[in-house]
Length: 411
Image (cartoon, rainbow, N blue to C red):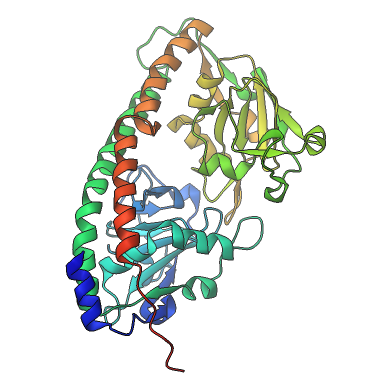
């Protein structure tokens, strides 16, 4: 730390120059990928906004077998790029280390210009909350779309390369452990997903005589949410869930909300009660659409538009886990519509056929899957908690090292 301070004092006695991203980086954008072309195996990993986690781009089971004919070479990742969400999850940023990967539309690709900034330095500057907040604030419309102009107008400090190199060396030591822990967590999640799919697939060598296969529409009803916008949120009142929060905040189930609206507005809104599923019916891709959270709170809560309430008599967690299976993903890929914004109708959700064992068996399966869920999402214990602690330590040193006095303008 003191060595870096001495270097800055020696090389930048008058402060550090700040420059716009557009002056020190190269910009590219993703390619519109048809959900029906995505396979579980292939030559080219497909990168969507859901692949970005804890500032890192993670490979998932989504691939293309061949490149789209109109794709540009600059749209193919070779490793070292910074990816930024430009719509929906606006500002969500991650560092990519995958090669021959394809980026979905509405994700910016940022590459460093080595004359001005080192690749590692750019990673530490951009993959943080300050940049994400800037992008979100500059976003407009319901999806908080940010333009290329606004993205490239973001200013960053540009100290001499010698200083950048030393900062990268220090911060990489902190971030490497976080990356290792994140990779281990992802491996555990893949194991969990495999086990969950097998546990919920009653066709594979199990006694299925007491399992009914039914359509969602035959055992429950879909109720469309309505009329709640983010501007309606207040500090207290009636709990509510906005469809966008299902993608960014909630996991499989919850008994509390992070947002509230007035009682007057709640009376006009559709409300979920204990056991209902709340389903986001729009997303950036087929994988994200129909993400569901089971409401386990005692009070009724309001639900926004672009979401459905699914009312039923089964174990709510069991149904929520069904919505996470690869079988349901295949259904979404087949029946979802749209390109820039992917949607799923209640009629098409209602067609999904799934296994319904007796309630006692549903409860047994849920108790097993709940333990896996805690291992991979609980921020108070296990790997997620350790990742969080290491990330906080890294962020402290990053913010300290990257806070430079600004060089006065020559004009």
